[in-house]
Image 1: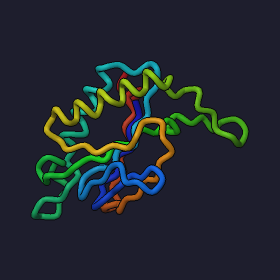
Image 2 (image 1 turned 90 degrees about the vertical axis):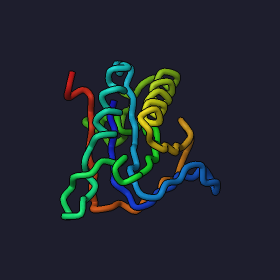
Image 3 (image 1 turned 135 degrees about the horizontal axis):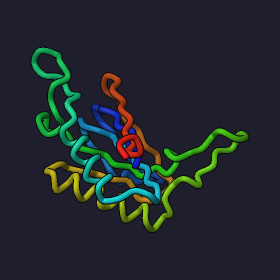
Length: 149
Protein backbone atom coordinates (compact mmCIF):
# COMPACT_ATOMS: atom_id res chain seq x y z
CA UNK A 1 0.00 0.00 0.00
CA UNK A 2 1.08 3.52 -0.67
CA UNK A 3 -0.25 6.57 1.11
CA UNK A 4 0.69 10.17 0.45
CA UNK A 5 -0.23 12.14 3.57
CA UNK A 6 -0.62 15.91 3.47
CA UNK A 7 -1.33 17.94 6.57
CA UNK A 8 -4.08 20.37 5.64
CA UNK A 9 -6.04 23.27 7.06
CA UNK A 10 -9.08 22.36 4.98
CA UNK A 11 -9.86 20.03 2.11
CA UNK A 12 -12.70 18.76 -0.03
CA UNK A 13 -13.35 16.32 -2.81
CA UNK A 14 -15.95 16.86 -5.53
CA UNK A 15 -17.47 14.68 -8.19
CA UNK A 16 -18.66 17.09 -10.84
CA UNK A 17 -20.11 20.01 -8.89
CA UNK A 18 -21.11 17.92 -5.86
CA UNK A 19 -18.96 17.95 -2.72
CA UNK A 20 -18.81 14.33 -1.54
CA UNK A 21 -16.22 14.71 1.24
CA UNK A 22 -14.93 17.63 3.26
CA UNK A 23 -12.80 18.28 6.35
CA UNK A 24 -11.41 21.18 8.33
CA UNK A 25 -7.89 20.64 9.70
CA UNK A 26 -6.28 17.22 9.54
CA UNK A 27 -4.88 14.97 6.83
CA UNK A 28 -5.57 14.41 3.18
CA UNK A 29 -4.61 10.82 2.40
CA UNK A 30 -4.11 9.72 -1.20
CA UNK A 31 -4.32 5.93 -1.01
CA UNK A 32 -3.01 3.40 -3.53
CA UNK A 33 -3.46 -0.37 -3.32
CA UNK A 34 -1.57 -3.20 -5.04
CA UNK A 35 -2.62 -6.85 -5.25
CA UNK A 36 0.11 -7.96 -2.80
CA UNK A 37 -1.33 -5.82 0.02
CA UNK A 38 -2.63 -7.56 3.12
CA UNK A 39 -4.60 -6.80 6.27
CA UNK A 40 -1.21 -6.38 7.99
CA UNK A 41 -0.39 -3.52 5.62
CA UNK A 42 -3.70 -1.85 6.46
CA UNK A 43 -3.13 -2.25 10.22
CA UNK A 44 0.44 -0.93 9.95
CA UNK A 45 -0.62 2.21 8.08
CA UNK A 46 -3.57 2.88 10.38
CA UNK A 47 -1.25 2.65 13.40
CA UNK A 48 1.40 4.90 11.82
CA UNK A 49 -1.06 7.53 10.60
CA UNK A 50 -3.07 7.58 13.82
CA UNK A 51 0.02 8.05 15.98
CA UNK A 52 2.09 10.26 13.66
CA UNK A 53 3.10 13.44 15.50
CA UNK A 54 3.24 16.23 12.93
CA UNK A 55 1.01 18.87 14.51
CA UNK A 56 2.69 21.62 16.51
CA UNK A 57 2.49 21.81 20.28
CA UNK A 58 2.53 25.05 22.32
CA UNK A 59 6.30 25.29 21.82
CA UNK A 60 5.94 25.09 18.03
CA UNK A 61 7.39 21.57 17.88
CA UNK A 62 5.84 18.82 15.76
CA UNK A 63 4.74 16.78 18.74
CA UNK A 64 0.97 16.16 18.51
CA UNK A 65 -1.03 13.47 16.73
CA UNK A 66 -4.18 14.01 14.69
CA UNK A 67 -6.28 12.79 17.61
CA UNK A 68 -4.64 15.24 20.00
CA UNK A 69 -5.66 18.17 17.77
CA UNK A 70 -9.15 16.76 17.02
CA UNK A 71 -8.31 16.57 13.34
CA UNK A 72 -10.14 14.71 10.58
CA UNK A 73 -9.09 12.73 7.53
CA UNK A 74 -10.07 13.08 3.89
CA UNK A 75 -9.20 9.74 2.28
CA UNK A 76 -9.09 9.54 -1.51
CA UNK A 77 -8.33 6.39 -3.51
CA UNK A 78 -5.64 6.98 -6.12
CA UNK A 79 -4.37 4.12 -8.26
CA UNK A 80 -1.96 6.50 -10.01
CA UNK A 81 0.37 6.22 -7.00
CA UNK A 82 1.48 3.00 -8.70
CA UNK A 83 2.43 4.69 -11.98
CA UNK A 84 5.49 3.27 -13.69
CA UNK A 85 7.16 5.98 -15.78
CA UNK A 86 10.41 4.19 -16.64
CA UNK A 87 9.50 3.53 -20.29
CA UNK A 88 7.99 5.92 -22.78
CA UNK A 89 5.93 8.98 -21.96
CA UNK A 90 2.65 7.39 -20.94
CA UNK A 91 2.61 5.89 -17.44
CA UNK A 92 1.75 2.25 -16.91
CA UNK A 93 -0.57 1.35 -14.04
CA UNK A 94 -0.22 -2.43 -14.16
CA UNK A 95 1.19 -2.47 -10.61
CA UNK A 96 -2.04 -1.01 -9.21
CA UNK A 97 -4.41 -3.46 -7.54
CA UNK A 98 -7.34 -4.99 -9.38
CA UNK A 99 -10.38 -2.75 -8.80
CA UNK A 100 -12.51 -5.17 -6.72
CA UNK A 101 -9.60 -6.05 -4.43
CA UNK A 102 -8.39 -2.46 -4.17
CA UNK A 103 -11.87 -1.22 -3.27
CA UNK A 104 -12.18 -3.84 -0.51
CA UNK A 105 -8.78 -2.92 0.96
CA UNK A 106 -9.51 0.81 0.70
CA UNK A 107 -12.78 0.32 2.58
CA UNK A 108 -11.01 -1.73 5.29
CA UNK A 109 -8.42 1.01 5.64
CA UNK A 110 -11.07 3.70 6.14
CA UNK A 111 -13.09 1.50 8.52
CA UNK A 112 -10.02 0.88 10.67
CA UNK A 113 -9.22 4.60 10.80
CA UNK A 114 -12.78 5.19 12.00
CA UNK A 115 -12.47 2.36 14.54
CA UNK A 116 -9.38 4.15 15.88
CA UNK A 117 -11.63 7.10 16.70
CA UNK A 118 -10.98 9.32 13.70
CA UNK A 119 -13.54 11.14 11.58
CA UNK A 120 -12.98 10.05 7.98
CA UNK A 121 -14.53 11.65 4.90
CA UNK A 122 -13.94 9.98 1.54
CA UNK A 123 -14.24 10.41 -2.14
CA UNK A 124 -15.86 7.71 -4.27
CA UNK A 125 -13.69 4.76 -5.23
CA UNK A 126 -12.95 4.73 -8.98
CA UNK A 127 -14.64 8.06 -9.69
CA UNK A 128 -13.13 11.04 -11.49
CA UNK A 129 -12.73 13.48 -8.60
CA UNK A 130 -11.47 16.99 -7.99
CA UNK A 131 -9.53 17.31 -4.75
CA UNK A 132 -8.70 20.69 -3.27
CA UNK A 133 -6.80 21.43 -0.11
CA UNK A 134 -4.87 24.06 1.77
CA UNK A 135 -1.59 22.29 2.52
CA UNK A 136 -0.40 23.20 6.01
CA UNK A 137 3.33 23.62 6.52
CA UNK A 138 3.66 22.17 3.97
CA UNK A 139 3.91 18.76 5.58
CA UNK A 140 3.82 15.89 3.09
CA UNK A 141 4.82 12.35 4.07
CA UNK A 142 5.11 9.22 1.92
CA UNK A 143 4.29 5.73 3.21
CA UNK A 144 4.98 2.56 1.23
CA UNK A 145 4.46 -0.79 2.96
CA UNK A 146 6.86 -2.43 0.49
CA UNK A 147 9.59 -0.72 2.50
CA UNK A 148 8.71 -2.77 5.60
CA UNK A 149 8.25 -6.19 3.98
